[in-house]
Length: 413
Figure (cartoon, rainbow, N blue to C red):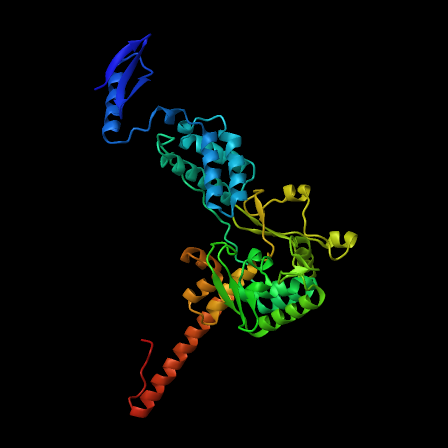
């Protein structure tokens, strides 16, 4: 049984939990408030929901430390992304008590990040990190927070729809440097991620059995996969092996640059895009409108193969003609478009979606659907197939009528 006593001009409560005595101020000079607090603590003790007084004093910085520790313990590969989210969150909530962060404070944080021109998707990743912090804190023994705040995610408009048609693949392959062509072809035919390809070693490739084996730990989801080689890709892999053994016999990487693992190749990629005729384009984050930069004047000064890099002044001067906002993201073709292309081509050619997911390494149906992009040509082909099937049905019906002398059946009243 607990008790209430007066200390100065504030009422305090005294109670016992698991044999340990606690004294807590009601922060009020009204005895009714003290009785309410005492009743709450006794109920929490009986139902084993008492968090302890330490949970009331937990600072937000402690939650971020536990969050990063959880990332290290589980060896998540996106640790760098977690550190970026923590840095932004600490910039706003560093002086907050963890229990003082409510919906109002989170909304203020979101407004601040949007004012800094952060994308909705970026803010959502940071809010996801915040939610995970409170999940870890509430599941601790004893809990480190009394409650977790509730908040809503922002609407995202960042689903890319880029892919390479066969003619695009041929043009890009011809304009890329020689050391990148096999890498590009492998991505186009297999849909493997860039990191999976650049880290691929010859002990994972069996040219005799015509397959690539991705071991656990080398893939994003840590699950093994087997990629079978055939046709043009098989010939490219044979040529790559012969070239590597002749010039760089000690190189263990399948795709390399002069015997060294391929690292950042953004500049080479951008030059190839320009040679193919692609202009720098940007997508409005608010309304989805596409803005292209005119490079003709820049070409006259710097030549036809200038960089796609846009300086800060030009970036700030971009204004969307549709909504008048200045919130853009790059919309040029990226290497990852090969992954979307491979998934779409597999489904197009009749590969069951469950098999395509095994090859591409997608674990959830939701993400797979984002990669299985339907283009205007797909929709046109579907309409043509439906129309052709309808015409064939009409012909069969007319032949049946003629053969049985049923007369003409009017299909329109």
